[in-house]
Length: 257
Image 1: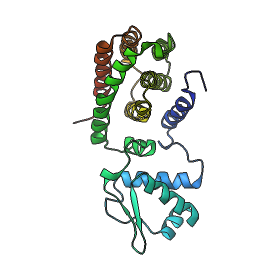
Image 2: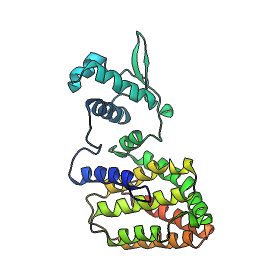
Image 3: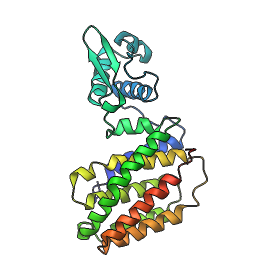
Image 4: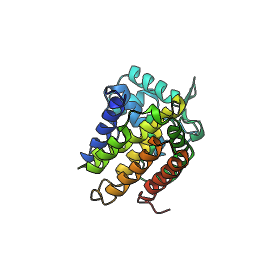
């Protein structure tokens, strides 16, 4: 891990993006059977294959569907219960909970929504929450401009500007926003980094078949302006620029709304 503490998250993000580039499943390849079953059931629930208040298949049927043991199925269900997505009742079975109970801050739940074929409502909600907390975070970072190593944000702007692939650009973009959250010194804000990551992942998926990237220099320049506002202690300007960046990012999503 580097001195800025970002390598682990950045490496995961890069692998997820490369899965899209290589035409693999959008969910990162499962490291074990339980993770695989969690991913398959979670994506199916989010996609509406098992609507709210309906029962998911019985354990023996899930075992047969995925070729796994009952122990794996039980552990997978425990994980989905912890995410607020399903509820198990003795002698009744396991049903899908209303989406209002789902943990929308969970990284898996976020990415399953990002992988939907028609994610317009999810995009709207995701960018709405970003507009609520990220401009405020940028302003707070500007108030505490000495919290970041000099030149760190500019370095990520350089990486965006010089990126030769959409993956490199997206990783630098994510790391920039993560550092802004870190600069606030607020652990609650820092924990919201997965929301930013998912927003950028969604944008990456939506544009993966578009030539890279006529907006590259524009986006990098806007981030550089915000970096300058933060490092020179201009909270109002940092807030304005972050709002502009998020709105521009949302406008780049190819949706018919």
